[in-house]
Length: 91
Image (cartoon, one colour):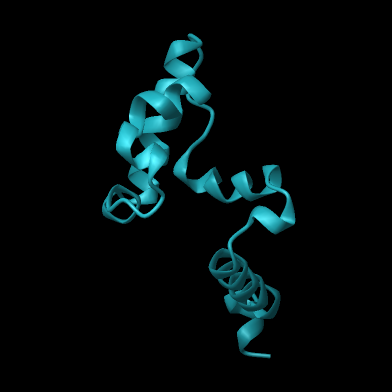
């Protein structure tokens, strides 16, 4: 994975976290390219679909998850906990 990261991220962005690359490249597009290349190099089918990207957070220690991401995930969880099937909405 480290090799893929170093091949896909411009060297200047690797040394400068304020480089515009970090804001210009959509995260979803980057992850799509990263996982495609990672699994290609291993001769495996790509097992990480866009719908699974939320699973990445499970591999981070809580203090490494940016506050903005935590807030968004908490908001999604709050809405999901209140959600009810359409058939239950009439009751």
